[in-house]
Image 1 (cartoon, rainbow, N blue to C red):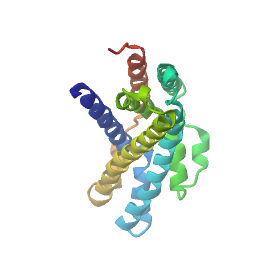
Image 2: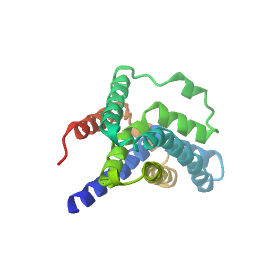
Image 3: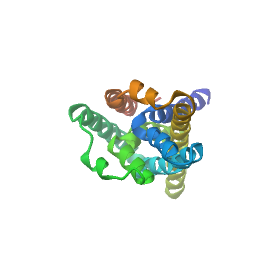
Image 4: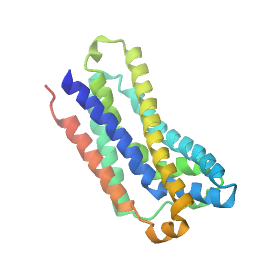
Length: 224
């Protein structure tokens, strides 16, 4: 029971940790919140901009997680589903490492369309895929006695888990991004952004690859 509780807690901490990582990354949108504050009514517009950014990010997570939540009630294929998800994450990470240019369609989205921009950016960079192996691990840990439950109940539980993971992750992302935006607007100024702008593309791709490899290892490792 202690091992199960620790495993579940560790996975949820990973969900929050990835959310913080996404929030720090300027590519997930916090500079747009600073821009909204500078061009609008100050911090009121800054916080208002965080709402659509969070909504778009949450939707991008849910679009990835919910289909797998619907599949994981197929207990006989759970291991295969985990392996497939891990391989998908690894392939996407390798694609990011090989093809380093940002998708052109992102430049066609107007800055005022914050929710759409946030959804497209998170999807294009595989933010939801980074959560996928962790989400499947949460389902596996929380359903050790799943063989004695009805399939409909399993599916409902997994879908609830998917929404919960997407929500917790998005909350961590937007709180962290909001702190970054507030600090830049209130104290650091835009010079900080221009001087300290950091490109996390390589770190992002390597993190995605690491998550995929760990997910594949967990799926292939026999459990007692």
